[in-house]
Length: 297
Ligand code: PHE
Ligand code: ZN
Ligand code: ZN
Ligand code: ZN
Image 1 (cartoon, rainbow, N blue to C red):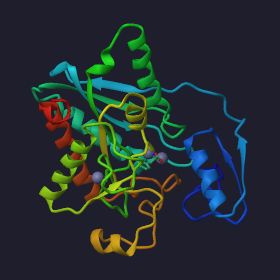
Image 2: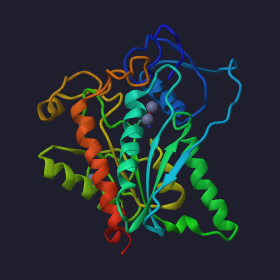
Image 3: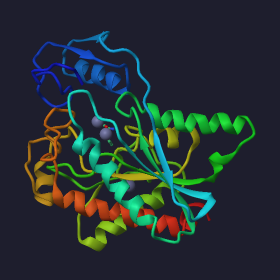
Image 4: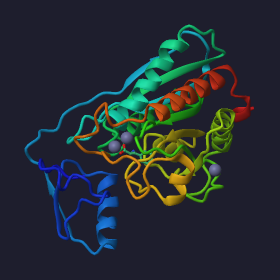
C-alpha cells in the first residue's frame, strides 16, 4: 500500500491504480513483494521509494494468559493490534483484536483445563514482525535449553473478521479447497473442521481460504510447525456473483472496500459477520481450552 494523502494510490490491490503507479512504501514487507508481482502481471511499473521522513521505532506485542489451565499445554489465540499508516484499521484489525479481548475477559471466569495465552501482535502490517519475533524468541530459548515452545498446542489467528461485504472464510488447513500452499501442520485440518462445524451449527455457509502465511499464523506454521487455524471475512478480493448468491452483499465490489484505507472506521463493519465470528472465536477458544486431544492426542 502507498501513502498518498489523496487516497488515489492507497490500495495496490484494489483497483484505484492509475496506469503508471509510483508509490511510497514506508517499509519493505511481504506486501511489497506481492505488490511488485501484481503490478508486473497488470503490466504496470512500480517504483519503491523508502519513506525517510520516519525514524525507526520500537513497537510491542501484548501478551496475556489465563490463570487457570495446564501451562504445559497452551492454546494461543492472536490478533494483530496495529493498522496501516493511511487508516484507523477498525476491520483490519480492530475486529479480531476486540473479539479476542472480549473472549479473554470471559475466559477469566472459566476453570480451564489448558492455559490460554492471548497475543495482540505489533507490526503485522510491516511484515509479521511481532509474531515472527515471538516465535523466533521461543526458538532461541529452545537452543538455550528452554523448550517452552513445545508447550504450545495450537495457534488460532483472527485478522479481519467483520468485513462489510463479507464471506465466511476458514483457513484451509487440510488443503481441500486448494487455495493454500498445501496442508498446514498436523492438527490444522482438525481446527478447520471445528470452524466448519461451528458454521454448520449456525446454518451459515463457509469456504476455505489461503493458508499460505498472509497473517500472524505464518511464523507458527512455517518456523515451527505448530498446528494453526483461523477465520477471515475478506480484504481486497472482489465478491463474485456466486458468492453474492450465497452470502448476499454486493458482487463486483471488494469484500472490504475500505481495506487499508482511511475509511476503515467503525462504519466499515458487518454487525452480523462480527457477531457470528465473535461467537466462533469464543467457542473455539473455550473448546480447545478444555480439550486439545484431537490436536495432540
Ligand atoms: N494480513 C492481511 C492484512 O493485515 C489480511 C489478510 C488476512 C489477508 C488473512 C489474507 C488472509 O492486511
Ligand atoms: Zn492489513
Ligand atoms: Zn490484518
Ligand atoms: Zn479445507
